[in-house]
Length: 306
Image 1 (spheres, rainbow, N blue to C red):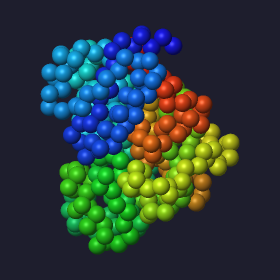
Image 2: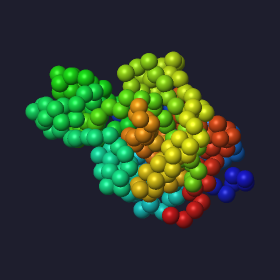
Image 3: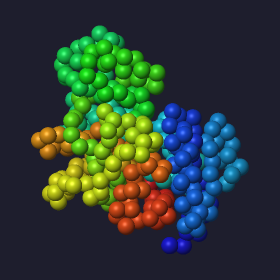
């Protein structure tokens, strides 16, 4: 492909969310790969002066690598739409929905797609009722955070209340859901294609922040070990789940499999990590795409009219 068709590309990274450090790593990875692919790209660490930079930097399209609030929740997407600048990834509505784990689960539940039983406590007293109704173990997570920030797995009432209090430091809405015991799979979406699923293994209680970005003993299995029929079922589930939210260009879904072989949807990330520990580039490599080909494929989505 003649990469001059993209014009001048701004890679947006950093930002002010709790995922800033991951975003910086992802953004620099993408920026370097775009440059190696021959794209006229430069980076912008998005801050309070971003509105001025839209006018002064003069770029033709944006590659969004902002994780978390302000970048993955529809905010920056709306700003770029208003400015008439094409951008990578999902639109305003899909970004906002997928960022909100509760709204995502409500949509999936309404369509009959399996997602773990859940509740949203607003007090320690409600935590007690949830523990009685759903039962342990449970996972506690902020509704509007990613990268496993503020997430805890708990097996007692005291731990549940402490985890709920911890999560409130990151968000005003906290999701408590039944922990599904079994293998975890991550499934990447590129355009209309579902990339090879990856089975994730960790010695931690669950796939937490440390296991995702820091640990060197986390295992990634691709091919994922499922039968052809099971893998087909998993891919079709993720395709339905992403279509329900109007996901486009690229995303990554997290799914658990229980002891009966059923797949349970956890969440969809509309701007997956692109660090050296990230799963999206790994899935793309399994599909035959190197990093340069991958970033150009994602960027190519900006050539289509929304």
